Length: 43
Image 1 (cartoon, helix red, strand yellow):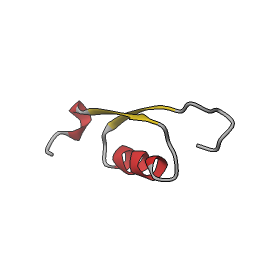
Image 2 (cartoon, rainbow, N blue to C red; image 1 turned 30 degrees about the vertical axis):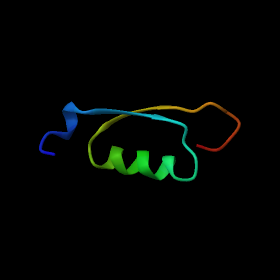
Image 3 (cartoon, rainbow, N blue to C red; image 1 turned 30 degrees about the horizontal axis):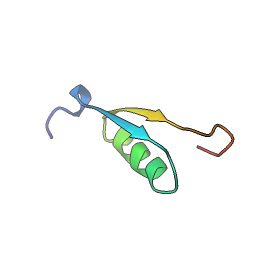
């Protein structure tokens, strides 16, 4: 993808797999929006 800054991605739930995936997308330059259902768990 040539223009990653124009793309936004949403994640619902950041479990054992979702958190590293969202972080990698952020590092790659994507705008990432997340929703975490339970605030007591580590993000």
